[in-house]
Amino acid sequence: MEPEILIVNNNQEDLDELAALAEKSGLKAACFLTAAEGWEQIEKGAPDFVIVSRSLPDQGKSLLRQISKLGSRKIPVVLLCDEEYLSPETSPEKGVDLYLTRPFAPTSLSSIHHCLAMMRDHENPLLKEKDKTITRLQQEMEDLQEQIEQAFAMSNQTAIEAEMAYIELNTIFRAVTNGIVLINQEFKVIRFNQAYQDLTGLSREEIKGSRCHDIFPYHLCGTDQCTMKQIVSGRLELVEQELERKMPDGAIRHFHLTATPFRGPDMKLIGIVVYIMDITENVLAKKALEESRAMYRKMSLVDELTGLFNKRHFNKTLEFEIDRAERYGNNLSLIMMDIDNFKIHNDTYGHHNGDVVLSRLGEIVAGCVRSCDIACRYGGEEFAIILPETPGESAITVAERVRKALAETEFYPNPDEAVIKTLSLGVAQYSKGEKLAGLVRRADRNLYTAKKSGKNRYVFDQTP
Image 1: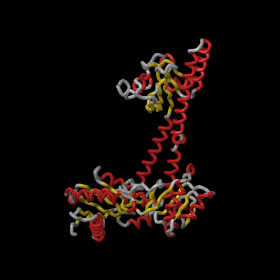
Image 2: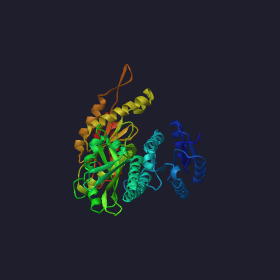
Image 3: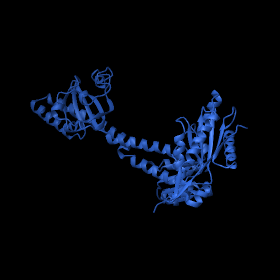
């Protein structure tokens, strides 16, 4: 069986840890210390994705370039980097699809594998072929225009030739697989094929004599910017637009329209030929792909177990709020909290029951804060709340609310055994000129004091 993951990392410790995570996730991994070995494996068989360490020498960039030249065999690349490397100002690395930061979560590789699989599933072949298809259709339109013009030219010669041209025109309208309609200079439908009727969901009687905007309304219809008017006036020779239409059965469908002027042998304008293609599947596939990418972006900021923001988002947001408090003189408070005796709980009842406590605490914290507050899982059993524009005296009200709510919650690791868990909390208010590390250190110090003082309490001490 070909490896599902290829890992190239010159750090043996990281390599061993990622290999272990892959094995726990049921994924087959091939691990190499050099880019040359990794590329040799890719030439043998393409994995689902490649993890490349940012700490590799220049040969790492060379490997990214080699992968990017694979064309249709392009393999998704995940760049392994330190959390500090990623920031709002960091430009995306060329050839990199996703990022993986230390420390590694137990589900890191399985989450990436699942997300990339979703992206591949949603990358409908129709999307990849869209530009090629539209180009082909434009060429088909040009060929069709030429055939129609030739047919009308023939009709001016003799009655027999006119009849033959009529037959040829009929053949063209029937042969085209997508919708085609001919409208005159008053925008009335004068000719259409069966595919056009099928696209509209209307009867022939409903279509005959109707105007183009009655069937496919567009927001510019009836204005001077109407694209059909611009073709009639000679300002445009080609119009392409996408629009959606509510069908008779209530469904919403999406269409791509290509319109060109239709001229007679003397080059006088007779009307407009409109070629219509149903692109609903393309639109839905693109939307699904965007949603899957948005979901992965959210996954990179949110802790999966508790639903709160993760430490990476905590650091970025706290830095931003400190800058804002310093610039405008606003209040800012920070609460750090830790579940009392959590290791004993895990050792006694198992990690699954420990996860139940963590998940419930996440719900409690989320329910005790305002929409402008930022609640995070800082790591392990430690949580944090950033409270913008909040003095320390108000922050202790939130701290007490969270502490009380957890202390009143019963957990049942065994059906007949109720267990109460408690919290120790440290509250600190931002002091002018203070850095992020200093504010976190004071909140942690107050948390430690709460632990030493008997636990199940908060401590608010503004001593530097």
